[in-house]
Amino acid sequence: MPKAKANNIEIEYDTFGDPSSKPLLLVMGLGAQMIAYLEELCMMLVDKGFYVIRFDNRDVGLSTKFEEAGVPNIMNEIMAFQRGETISPPYTVEDMSDDAVGLLDALNIEKAHICGASMGGMIVQTIAFRHPTRVLSLTSIMSTTGNPNLPQPKPEAMQLLLKPAPTEREAYIEESVKRRRILYGSGFPYHEDKARELAAALYDRSFYPQGMARQLVAILANGNRKPKLGSIKVPTLVIHGGDDPLVPVEGGKETAESIPGAELVIIEGMGHSLPPEAWPQIVDAIAKNANKVNN
Image (cartoon, rainbow, N blue to C red; front, side, top):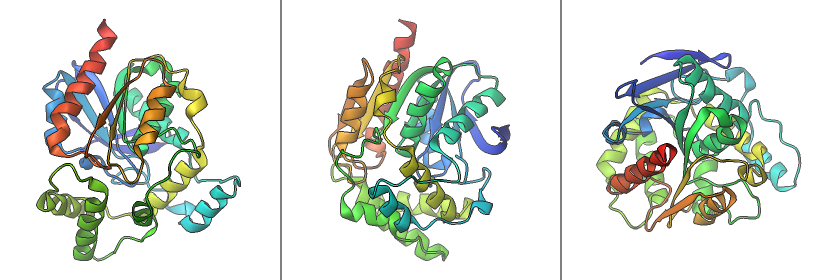
């Protein structure tokens, strides 16, 4: 897969479809590599007329790692956050949004449709108000505004963020299957074989939990985006699972309420996941939102 120099780092990326089609930039979540946007999903978006770009955020996958920053003590950082203290991450969500725009620069794409899941939703929200001239439409999936007054993750979901991942391959794969099940939601069949297959691919491609810890500190330091979301003018779609234990559905509802004209789609029974059975609904909604740009 190719690499691009952007925002003083190297970004690993991948594309699907015709470069002359509508560009759609997919941004992944906390500690997640770009291959978590499965190829089958990317090709469904290609069939809707998109040129799909997925990439590894900084500090994950095959993009630049920030090893020299060290590994933060997550529990200490969370406690400092809860006390209202200032957190100083090695980089910010704004930096990660600038990375994404830098990738568009490297690909000579002036404007793109942007879609992010979880932390990726936070990044694309930030792109939309920080780089408004670069955005055609916005889709924020299973994300939130960062408002500290919103409902917090369920305890069992929060524990997944704090529990270190096993370092040995088979143990990592089995733990990943269990964690994904906890987050998945109750309304769709959980495909354990597919979860195991993806976990193995992620481990073999790049096992790097240190980056996830630094990304989590960047999220904590980002604060409440709600006051800035009102400036977003592009067609916006907010998708959220009604059964999300990590980012409760209220986060999606407030995101949609904060962005003028945003459409909210709640998928009942979906957790913090993208079940294949929900892909047609998600893809259709993204395409419909993008088509508003031409109207």
